[in-house]
Image 1 (cartoon, rainbow, N blue to C red):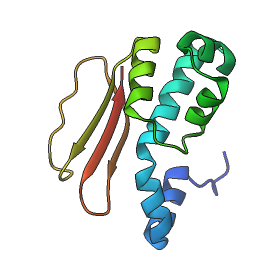
Image 2 (image 1 turned 180 degrees about the vertical axis):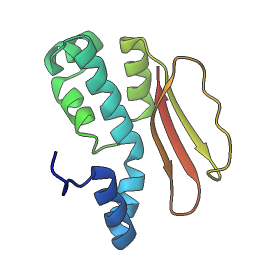
Image 3 (image 1 turned 180 degrees about the horizontal axis):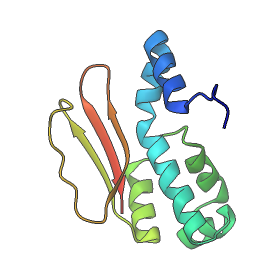
Length: 127
């Protein structure tokens, strides 16, 4: 790997620091990105295409594709359907600040843990 490699996290942090509109968008879409990771990971682990997963969940293929883009926050109904169809728990926790401890059950992996500009915290996990 080149000595000039730049980490994506560093690029995003720099952009958030210099562009308030981007930061607001990035924070607002944290849940969408977390669910995209969860759906893509599930499909990969089970060697499913988007169409096969859509059939398994009884959802239109386009909805799976949209979820995987991570550009739209899923509704509670979509999270319920994913939980039931994938046999996984999805946990979304919102806390008033980053110091607030959020306990998660065993077997649950944090997908996203974001401290918003106002100091509140949004955590998404699946397992």
